Figure 1 (cartoon, rainbow, N blue to C red):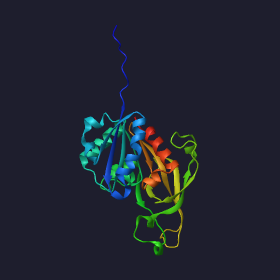
Figure 2 (cartoon, rainbow, N blue to C red):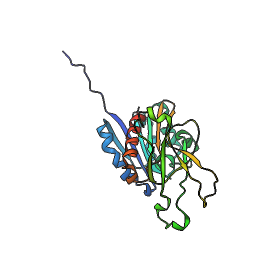
Figure 3 (cartoon, one colour):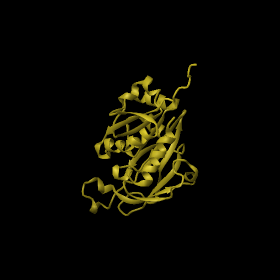
Figure 4 (tube, rainbow, N blue to C red):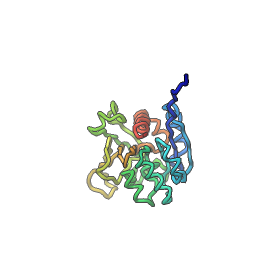
Length: 238
C-alpha cells in the first residue's frame, strides 16, 4: 500500500538588506534570522534588490523582509516586487529599511504607505555630529485597533529614546500605533504633529507591515519592539 502522505513544504522568506550602514542592515536582519527559522521558514538572504527582478523565484516566496535604506530600485526590480506582493507575498520591515528605501520610485512609496520625512533632534547647542543628535525621548502610543490586533495585542504604550520618525502617509494605512512630535522653540512647526509609528496595509492579496522604531540593533532588542516586529513578520507572511 502506497503512503500518499506528504510533508508540508517549508515557507520561504527572502531577506533583502543593504543601503546605509548606519542602520546596521546586516546586524539588524541577523537578529531575526533565528526567529524566522524557528517559525518554519526556509530563509534566503540577498544583499541588494536585484533579486526582485526574478519573477519566478519571487512567486514562490511567502515573506520578504527588507532592510535597505536610502538605496535605489530599478524598474524591473520594483515591477517584480509589486507583482509578488499583489499576488500574496508578504512585505515587512522596520525604520528606514522599508520606509526610506527607494526615494526614486513613487510607486514604491505608495505601496508601502509611509515615507520618512525627518527625525527632529536635540537642541542645536547639544548636537555633536553623531547619530545620537537625533535621539530624543518619545512615546509609542497604541491606537484602539491595537488592542485586538495579533501584532500588538497585550502591548501598552511604551517609551523609547531613539530617532522619532516624522512620516508622510495616507489614510489607507491601518495604524496600530502613533507618535507625536512636540512643538519646540527651535523647530519651524507650531503645533504637535502625529505620525503613524506602526502600521499595516493590504496591497492586492499581499500584506505589508511597517515599524518605524528600529534604528539600530539596541532598539530592535527592546522587548516591545522585538515582539511587535516578530509578530508583524508572521502576520505579513502569505
